[in-house]
Length: 52
Image 1: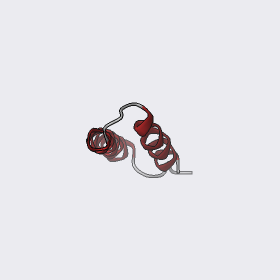
Image 2: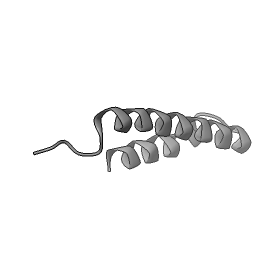
Image 3: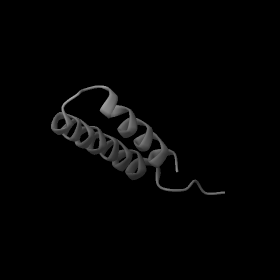
Image 4: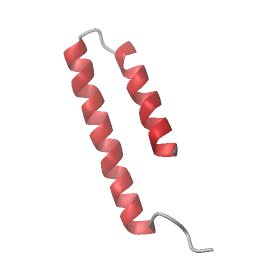
């Protein structure tokens, strides 16, 4: 949930940063790739759930 919410906020605010839609698309893709890479390493280290 948190990852999806953060990605949605970042990608929705990206069009306000630049005027060219092609650059906005590229920046959005780079941001999304970076977010998923970070999440991959976090989940690899800590797992999806903590044991109760």
